Length: 60
Image (tube, rainbow, N blue to C red; front, top):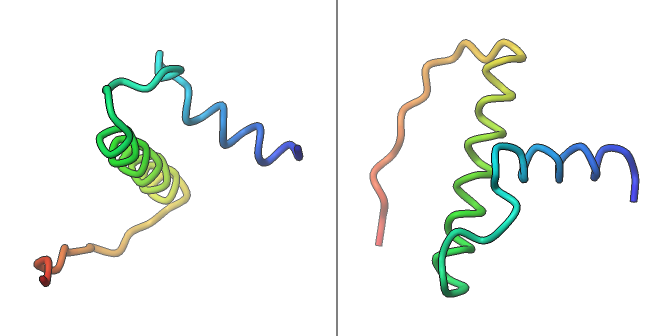
């Protein structure tokens, strides 16, 4: 694996997040997606994201 992949994995498991926090695939999958989105947003903010974003209501 390349250095970028190892760095991304290090970010995901930082802070005691080495194990799945829930029992069941669905809850852990949701947790993983939220964790990755949070890390991506934090990285964008640190890189200088200045646009004010709003969330659109969910459509069903």
